[in-house]
Length: 155
Image 1 (cartoon, helix red, strand yellow):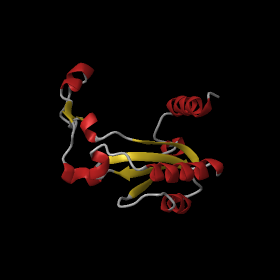
Image 2 (cartoon, rainbow, N blue to C red):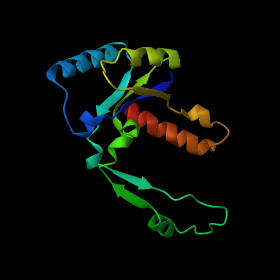
Image 3 (cartoon, helix red, strand yellow):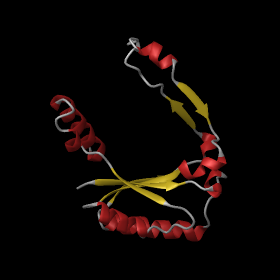
Image 4 (cartoon, rainbow, N blue to C red):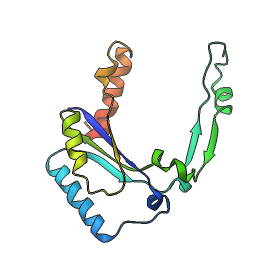
């Protein structure tokens, strides 16, 4: 069954590390309980403000880039520590849910039930190994599938 990520957008409240009132926690708990009872919820967490984070910027590689030394490439990676500009808050994440649903329509139906106000949720399907068929070498694909099985329950 396809997996979908609900990306919760940050706002000035979440960026100020303001926790919601107890009623909101109760609403979130009820929503999470409904997702769990339906067998849809795979995970979900809130995130701390961007002031406690960093962005890691990777340079583009060009067709003339012959540097294959990993250390030399890593030296060109740039890190920017938060907080990030408030005017970009709509691009920041405040949290996420990871669910499974039969299709986008069902996932959007779950997202519409979320007890949120004054924000938005972006719903995106997660790439599955089958999506990489023909592009990723078979042995690599099988190894990654094995990793996922371990992550999902220690099989």
